[in-house]
Length: 413
Image (cartoon, rainbow, N blue to C red; front, side, top):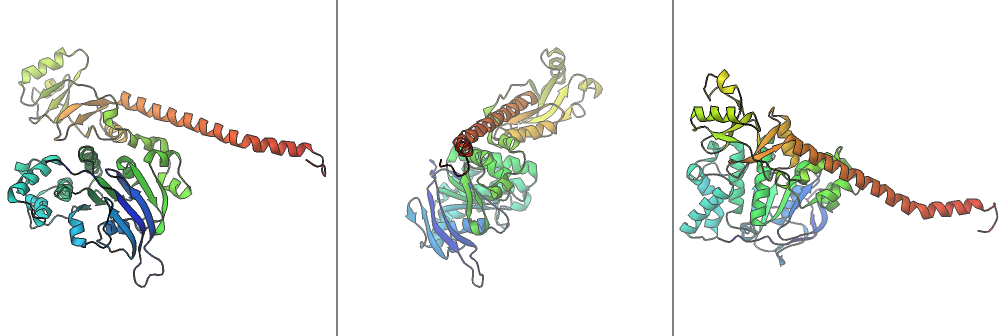
């Protein structure tokens, strides 16, 4: 089934006042978000970013202002009908615990009147899309899933009725850092396939850099401090408030702008868990370019790094041989993710995997360091150019001051 592409979102002087409050929670927010664009709201706690997000689907009713989606004014539309046209994913997934995975995903398509067969096919399609085997997961309950699996199902449910807009309110904030990195990569991959319009709230600026086409840095009451691309904000923050969010190490933060797929993903010799032991031993002994192999499990996923001598020391048993693969990255992971994975793994490289965890190649430390050096050099040249531009701007003023100093006191210039 063809997916609906994203829709434009226009906010016009959107304001929220709560009774008894001297100041509005959100004060006159205006912005335009392009169809298929991922925009991140980032700002301090209590600045109104979640309130602004929830006014888009009218979970919170605006006090004043207008909302247009795809050119249609939805400010006074039936809010229930509006929400059925907008996907919504929140922290801790928000799945109904008494419903199976399939029932959770099917909820909105059933509400809007899809046929049973179409709903069943859509559930299978969405589970496959988020990298979960439908046969394994459709009948499970949320309590039987890990935190990362629950979040994947939450995203599948939000996308099930094929909405053009997806709102995400700190959806990955409650999971561990490694799972969070993988969920972020999954969202990037999904967006490449689906081209939805995504509005995403986070307090984590690194997450904003990684995910956003543009970032809206919000002050109190959702006043926009800067609304620009991640690269523009990193290299040219609008003021001290934005600089505080960028923090130290802007050059290294730019590693979040480059993906593993953009650098050299290399082949690496592999063997499988069900290969005969003697053939694994022979490959290790005969290898000329490396003294190491990657052992894949029966599903083709990275399992262990095997080095010469491992099988001998482990007396020929794969159970005791080699070193478990500590972490992997996908092609949509950032270079920062890959660098962190390499630094925590003694192998000097990280395995790159596909959507179901299958091995696709490796990225090594040399490749990553070369990329870091290139980014640092780009920043050095940009700083020199900026300094030169400032000197050019100051030159006429300096000449004028010098000419003024050449005149005697009281002499007409």
